[in-house]
Image (cartoon, rainbow, N blue to C red; front, side, top):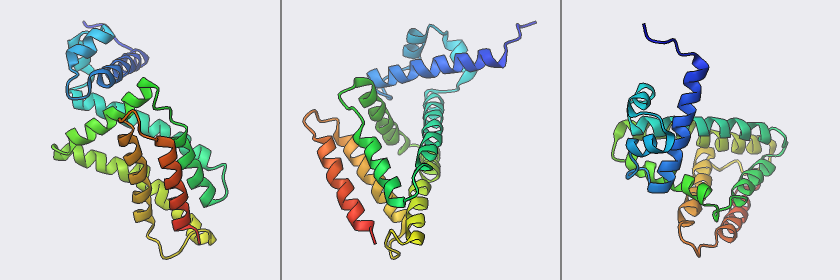
Length: 203
């Protein structure tokens, strides 16, 4: 009879696998990193890893979903401390202005996300999952804030909330991708984008 493994032990193992996977993905890139790399870093056997995850894609999706959910819950809590829609949008811009791209771990995390987006673009099932995640956690969040501002009179009523939300995230994604260049003035560019966006939406 096989030993009984507690739920807490399973959860601990999953977290160890995910933590090792993130390190390997950030170091080598999602495409190049292998399950063997994760085995080597974590010390967990390949068979044990496959007991928890069917593939490298599944490992990444779990990493992304966990990170996104935790970040989203924290964001919603922080946004709740602001009454003004403009203040909420300013707060979101400022969060990214605080990102330290000189930190290899932080920079690596953004690069891994971008690599996986390209990988998913060739796989319809993965692309659909990313599309659902984008709408649920990113577009809907910003569109909701825009609608609040329109109702309060802070934000122009003729703007399309979802389009403005996509514009916001396009700017954020754009500057994070560009940060791969060592001479890219990330903070200056994002500061200019923030000013232009706020001027665009204010009533």
